[in-house]
Image (cartoon, rainbow, N blue to C red; front, side, top):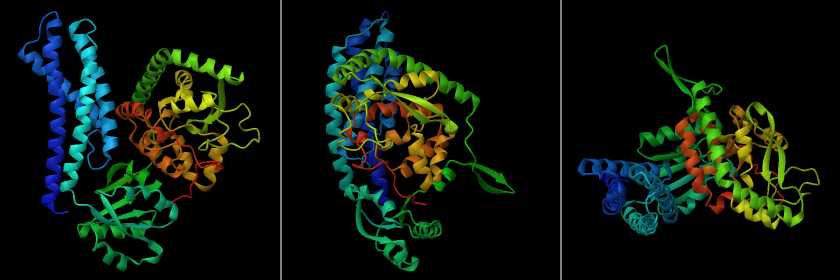
Length: 457
């Protein structure tokens, strides 16, 4: 890609983001002036309306960025539309609350329903047009893929579906391709993907790509993720990466606990009717227990009992073997299929959060038996237990139920390295999005005990 094309892409993306933000923000501000401003005790005039427009605009941009609603070129049109609809829905709730607060009473919902439908249709049209414009300018990168083992390669198989962004020309196993020959291949394409290759080999390739203005896409290993989250210290005038066990500040832990309690209490109150209906449905189906309690591991391998609505038959593990749910698992009851689909089976974990054995955000707690299986082939799996287990996290937001544990560990370690109040809030907001994504609940293959894959180290 030439520098001119790169600049044009940047300018186009900036224009597209500004266009939809100002259009939706301006339309909402116009609705405020036309329908709601006169309902206030003292009508807002020019300066007040300008300030309100600024708040409306900034809130939309913030929410849209959190949900990836501007990610033209890196996501499919369907994903962009879905993200925009979720963003608009949450944003209009914020605007409704703001308008009601200013007006000192609940304003009419009708206008907001019309706005939601109109904005969603506009956002869908914008996504189609923006995507088409972007790929009229964007040059598809011709790439080669270099891998060390088939598991590492499979984890990146999705890039083959991104035909507008990448065209895979060749694939190589690094054992069969000396560096000199690889360099010749790289010079014939735009980029190289490196997945699971030895560190010394990878480092030489990355340096070569940087020196020759080629893109290098590297799938990190767990050690890379740990180093990425390290602290930089200056020793003897040399920058040194200091890697250590994570130690969260006392203030962060206090704020996090406060958010956990507040979140759990609010969700229990809101979801109580759904939990009651679910409990009755489970009991009526087979007269078995409503709840399912299971031993799980949290921070420092401490054992606790997680609570879920029972979605499987009472004797689902009568053979004594711990296993994950498979696709089309016949152990799942009809009621269980529905509550799993809607994520209602997870709601009782709010009581775990309230009691302090879990947090809202953190690595998902694993069963001791399955933890031992993972640790035999992947000792790094224990690094997830540096923090308290959570209801949601990186692996749930960015992965799937059947995402391999190696990739999940990397995601969890990424969160552990970045953990902050803002990161927790961001993941909580993103969790709302995945509630409507069916592919994130896919099970593992039939007969598979865990979601395990060979280590890529």
